[in-house]
Image (spheres, helix red, strand yellow):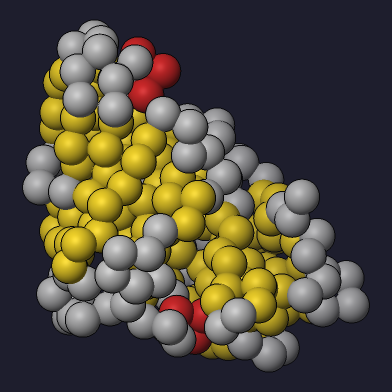
Length: 113
Length: 114
């Protein structure tokens, strides 16, 4: 079974802190990855895509290490509004023009005043 | 912005009822998906469709069926609702390039079966 594994947390960090989540994947055929953010009782929303070695968007940095099969998400200068569950998603081509997304179970972040 | 609309935000149904969950997207996406999300289990794929009248089983299709008569609409059907189908149901859509652009999710339907 092709899995994406995440530490469920919760990660409780003070405002302004830097926090990092790791995600490991077992399917070496995974070609790219996403990080989604999900607020309580809401739908997941795309945060970042990770195609090659990494991607940076403001306070958020995602890195991909194919040799070790893990992806990380770094959040700098945490804000209260960053409190959410972060889902790691692996994408693998499954043949006949289709692909499969595999979702991790999510890591919960709480940023404390 | 892609919009994926699920017909109900909250739904309460009785055991044995036939339940229809509707999902409509307005961006001409080919691919549509139904997931359920439960605490500790994450998102699990029920069914998906890459084209009109086409459907494929996901990881947990038992007790569910789907219908895709029009490109923009993907319906999930619980043939005879049971209490273990109480869950949050999420619909998503994407282009064939979804591996680059990701999925867009609807706001979810929280179904309670009593």
